[in-house]
Length: 130
Image 1 (cartoon, helix red, strand yellow):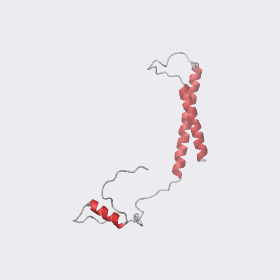
Image 2: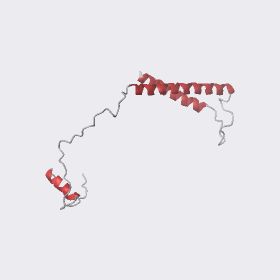
Image 3: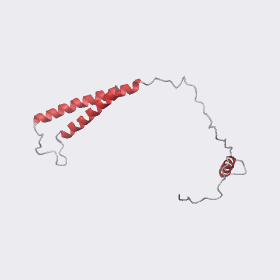
């Protein structure tokens, strides 16, 4: 049902854009609004205005329907009645101990790399092309 409403909504959007673009500009701020076009009769302007208003109403109705359908599946929840989430530790990670008085953060990271079996690089190395 939601897919049908989305398709109808998109068709309304496309026709609404076309109806707005067909209307005569009355602003005339840049001198583009005047002149006689092929749709300059008064009856056509009333028809386009009425069509735009109807399409705008349908757009509003389909938008509200889609919003209602999206919110209908939600279950109300309270943050007061829920238990706190437990944090799980990663399986392969080893805990990092805080640095002691004999070293800094880099020394600690070097020790962790050595514990995991990865040799620590002695100096920065340039990237190698493949």
